Image (tube, rainbow, N blue to C red):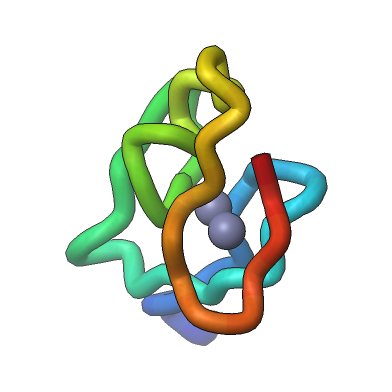
Length: 54
Ligand SMILES: [Zn+2]
Ligand SMILES: [Zn+2]
């Protein structure tokens, strides 16, 4: 079995890849940022280049 060390952010609109060591885990899903983990309550994106989530 391969150990997965990086996954796409679990936020739908987000294209960021997060490594599991830095991911923000919420409900067992990895998110790239607090904004994604909270479901973008303020409409704020994660702020990563090239990503238009939020
Ligand atoms: Zn994003
Ligand atoms: Zn994200």
